[in-house]
Image (cartoon, rainbow, N blue to C red):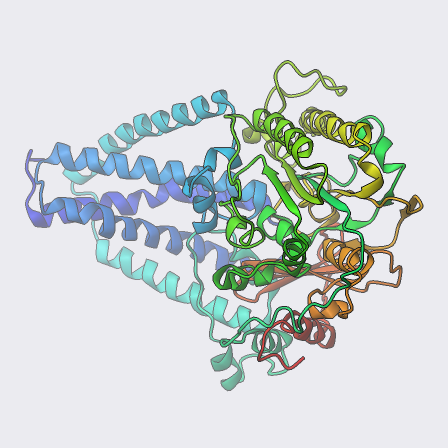
Amino acid sequence: MNKFLTKKDSLRYGSWIFLLHTLIIIPISFLYYRNIELNAGVFTYFYLTILTISHFAFLQYLIFGILYIPFTFFFTQKKILQTIAILIFSTSIFILLIDTEVYKLYRFHINSFTLNLLFGGNGLEIFEFSSSLYLFAVLIFFAIILFEFFVLKLFNYLFKKEILKNGWLIFSIILLMLISSHLIHAWANAAAYKPITKSSRLYPLYFPLTATKLMYKCNLVDKDNSKYSMKSNFIDDNKTLNYPKNPISCSDSIKTPNILFITIDSWHYKTLDSVITPKIAKFAKKGCVFTNHSSGSNGTRTGIFSIFYSLPGLYWYDFLSASQSPVFIDELIKRNYKFGIFASASLNNPEFDKTVFINIDSLRTNSIGKKCYSRDINITNEWLAFVDKNSKSPFFGFLFYDSPHTILHPPEFKGPFQPEWEYAKYQELDNDTDPTLFFNLYKNSVNFVDSLIGSILNDLQEKELLNNTIVIITGDHGQEFNDNKKNYWGHNGNYSKAQLNTPLVMYFPEKETKTYSHWTSHYDIIPTLMQDVFKCNNPIDDYSLGKNIADTSNRNWLLVGSNDNFGIVEPDRITSVYFNFNYDITTPSLDDIDNAKLRVELFNDIIKKANSFYYNSTE
């Protein structure tokens, strides 16, 4: 082949090489199959076959059109175009490999939310990886580039021998597959046919066709299908916040105790005991312990939101856009509390500085320290200094520790659980991994944070402040170590206890110690403080979906999650609803329930309650 290519040859050359790269991409795509149980028939496998081929071929043509074709207007040299193609292919394959690992751990793809966390400022505080993991990634990338040179040599041989023919026929077959896969999904989506709708979430950048109304109109699915009812009842395009529903009215003639929230990021619900957290466990004997406590979500953004707003994370973007502060924080400001807000990770990513703490003057949003454990040590010292300065006036404290989230502790810290991994080896995790060494590392990171919290509790004791300080210790959400044997590691992946539940200790001066086993929630914390501390007259549903935490009456369901996906957790099952209103119904341990039906009446009742803090709600 000539050193220079005509415009026609450069386009033909590029289109073939991008098409043939689908043959490399498709085997990689099978890595997504590690994360789904397909107890389906021939029809589902047929769908997955044509979807896999057509979707990844379509992505290759998309990359071809967006990234390769513009270079053909400026370069005609064969070697330059080859180099550009190699860099494009290598990067796309590398990103795909990373996405398969992200999906394996969290069951979502690389998206705007994760990119915002990583690159939106303070990303290295949220994701801390070992140097060996970075080195491994670099080596993989260069190995892909080397592999691409061999692929290109083979391709040039085939191209030169004019073996590659009938491109338009192949393209037509792929287009037919693509259209067919979307039509099949449109039917499955309307019919709530789970084997197909569930498998459709496997692939990145796949936005399948939905045509529910058309399917009903053509009598292709049952018109009584519950999914349509779900979507129509949930969506409301003209929502305006009605929070609180009525002005908050609390007593002016009460003492103003100090209030301290200590929150541990990603705190597994089984790791509050005398060995893992000896300091907290000892302190818990003075207060109330809640052994069946759920967060309002399985992620930090909506988990913290559920604590302070006592509402599901589905409201997050509404409160963010409205710059609406929680009624609890507003009540503290009204009572002239001093604020000590010390978070190890940044408070502006997620935007807690524009939601929870928006009305707090001179808010400190970032902490000093390159590593999470350094920042955890620093916020402890800053808090101790804050108490020294403000012990004479009522104060509110919020401490947010990060080491268990990054699963790391200082190298010199020797935890009680040995042996342990020296760092989180995410690349080694799969459904057959023995979690012991990884979980030991995690428990030691919790033990390290416990030692810091112990110094805070001791300081309050020594300063004789405990007789006038309410202390609440909990996590923003849980952290899974393949507890359900479904290859889930971490959080943000499901709404089982492993990811949703977290310990809760509440210490009130002069209240009797007690252990509660009834089902409690983050939604219950603020109503308890508003009622029991500030003697507020408002009914709880003026500002919360929770109840007083001492109320032991049965809780039949809990609405959890975010706008991206949410869940309805019931004692006997979990209904997980996704952005396109497909849903799965599983047991609490994530096993599929055969022929499970949506409990339509309950779902509609929950959605009405969920919409009750909008002005146009019918509730």
